[in-house]
Length: 149
Image (cartoon, rainbow, N blue to C red; front, side, top):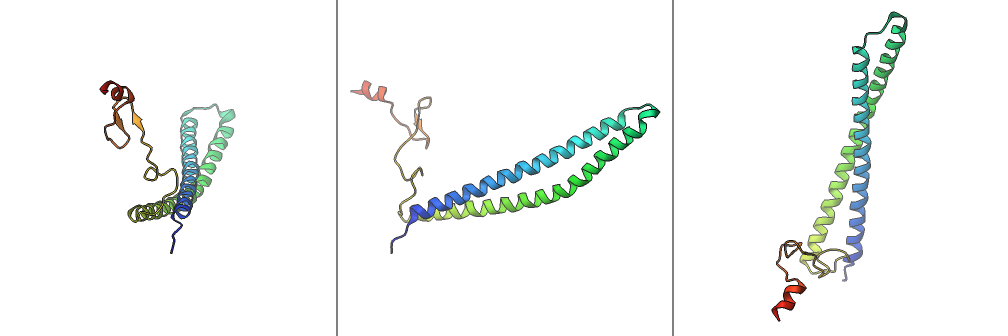
């Protein structure tokens, strides 16, 4: 029986990345709602701190009431957005755990891994400042190899 680990792991990676994109979108949407809520509260505080002449007082109070209605409408949106964000977080977490466990299984059993995985290719990234690769192993630069001859 031959396992198609490359394609299956690549599919799981795409699924994980898609769930992460959904989580980012949900988080951005939720953050925007909370930001708008805070801005409206600040505006109401500023409006209430202002003393207005009697001839514009009704308009001023109507503006404050309209902003309070906007805050009430945002309260329902906040609850729904938070619930959606939590669900997206759970979905991403499950997809990431599934990918990681499948990747570990494939690595442990010597199965082929999709291209682009660090464990699949032997390319090492050298940091010229530290003289080490990304994994912390010491590597020689070409200049030091040439000097050693």
